[in-house]
Every structure is written in C-alpha cells, then in structure tokens.
Length: 139
Image (cartoon, rainbow, N blue to C red):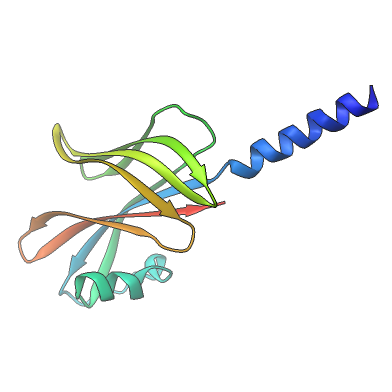
C-alpha cells in the first residue's frame, strides 16, 4: 500500500511540474511620454524589438497551461486571446493561439514559448501607436 501511495504522489508531482502559467498582456507602443512600471520585466525586449521609447499596459490576464482545454483570456478594449496548450518539451511550451479584436481574427497560429523569452505579436496600428500582444510563461 505504501508503494502505491508513493507512486501516486510522484505521479502527481511530475504532472504538476509540467503545469505552467501563461500571462497575456495587451500593450500599447507609443511615442507619448508614459512610464508603466508593470512592464519593467519586458520593456527592454519591447524597445529592442519595436523601437518605441514608451509602452503602456492596457490589459492583462493569465491562465494555467496544465490541461489540453482551450482557455479564453479577455484583455479588455475588445481584445480576446484563445490559447490551447499542445505540448511541453524541455520547458518549451507549444500552444495554439487565436487573437481577436471584436469578431475580427488578427492572428491564428501555433507558437513555442519558453520561460526565458517572451513572445511578442504586433497587432493593429492605432494612429502613430501599435497594439502588441506580449506572452510570457512561468513554470
């Protein structure tokens, strides 16, 4: 009986080790002088990738990646992301991703994300600004 409990506990720990959290942030890249400390962890990468000096977080939501079910993330301003976890290999997570603005599909793709590198997807232009979807994974 003790062996059975040990095996069950190890299986539960191994299963939970694969569980991760996906954080989706809706970001506005702008030339206006805005400082948003909530983006401090990814702002250098955003500047390097998009070249804007200022970024503002417009919405954020996170979800667990421990199942295979599709998750809906409402980021506000009419933007919604649907994420379906596919696989995990050496801490790299593969997901199916659908990004919508209202009823308009902006992006439908399969992406690989690691905890070390955020994934940025350039969205629609709003005047001189751009909307960016920033995805990060934490184990």
